[in-house]
Amino acid sequence: MLALPGALAGIGFAWLVGPWMVRGLGNSQAETALSVRPDFSVLAITAAVACVCALLFGMAPAWTASRTNIEGPLRSSHPRTSAGSAVARRIFIPLQLALSLMLIVVAALLGATVVHLRTDYTGFRTKNVVFYIADFGRLPQKGADLVALYHRILQRMEEQPGVESASVAAVLPYHGWIAKATFTAAANPKLSTAEFSNINVISADYFATVGTRLLSGRDFRNDDSDLHSCVINRRAAAMYFPHTSALGKMLHQVERNIVTGTTTTRDCQVVGIVRNTKYDTVRESPPSIIYFPVSAQSYRLTNMYFAIHGRSIAEAEAAYHKVIHELAPRSPETDPATFNQLMNDSIAQEQLLSALSGFFAVLALLLSSIGIYGLVARDVSRRTTEIGLRMALEATRLRVFLMILRQTAFLLAMGLAAGAAAAFFAARSVSSFLYEIHAENPAVFLAAAGVLVIVGLIAATLPARHAISIDPVNALRSE
Image (cartoon, rainbow, N blue to C red; front, side, top):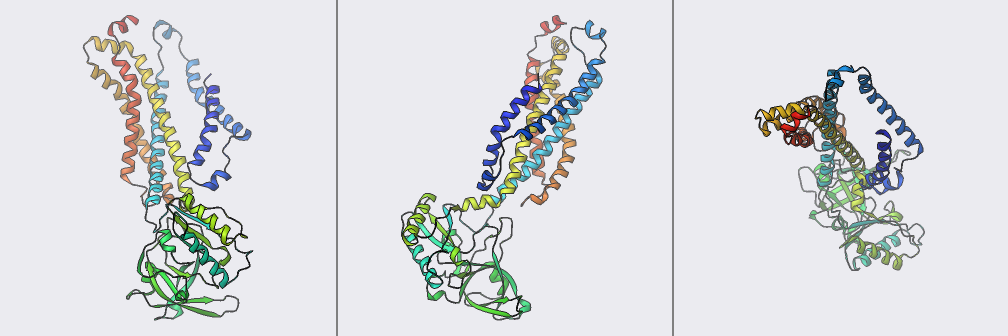
């Protein structure tokens, strides 16, 4: 009677909540790749687990009932319970509370991690920025002609209504890959002093499009003045030119051919310095980055990424489609990727863990509150005569109310004591997933304990209010 309706309700709940949880991740790939509709094998396994749990947890009270002395209950107008069953109930509730505290702490830590990842400085503007990958491999333009085509497309895009700026780049932020190369300052060209830096190939207005501030110098100009020029970020400037300004200085890019064993260099003059940005993941510290202008020798020349900043995503997308149809009609259109979507994809794992832990924490809180309510309500029902007698002897309603809550406070204290230790080890186990928050953060533990206490007291207040509404005369007559 209890298990079957609960099982049917659980199946319906899983059917409804599964897609909602996947959508809550904000990851488009996860939404299409994950199937959360329960199938026959999943239902069979969970049904078997549910049956085993129902049998296991039903055996203890059933065994107690089979060993009950008949004479005592028949003589009394109210049911009595054995000391063993009462002790068992008072042990299970603190265990529920301890588990709830552990899950709340983990959920709070993972939730704080997601908040920090979303609000931490990245060096970019993510609002109303959309990216499209070019598919220009089939076009007749090659080399310098293809670079000129990119420049014409960008100029035409910036003329479209609603477009603030447009540019191209070889590598997107948070796309999981960026090229690296070895550089050394011209003033100290020894290979022993060479340091690795990330590299990206961009056109003019890239920094304006993605919202990275230019600190000094100038941007690229999409003309001959870009020849042998480069823009570096602040960290690269500090790495290669620690005691002087990097503007106007020369950088050597050192290229080693592992097949032939030869080493070649390419020089570039630093014409601008920009703020640090995070490129690979949001978790990383900003790497050193060297930006080169688009040229006929650039890698990924046929598959650059268009970056468009518009007043809205819709206006940016409309500008892309219109200009591509005009200037490169033979190239296939590609799917867009918004900057916000790239950000969400880069923290998909953290968001998944946060959503799952939060869901189970809420579920554990609900079960704990139901357990406390049931225990206190049963205790009030069993002690109706006692409560009536106390009130007949002029015990105040407040005193009776506090007497009922005292039991709940004792259970909460036991659950918090056991749960604090369990939560400590659980928090340490997820420390590798945390960002800018310590696993032993005392504020998180105190907040989790406060939530658990409030929920527990609210659950106990409902039967406690019933206790203080008992009429002493009717309570004594019922005995």
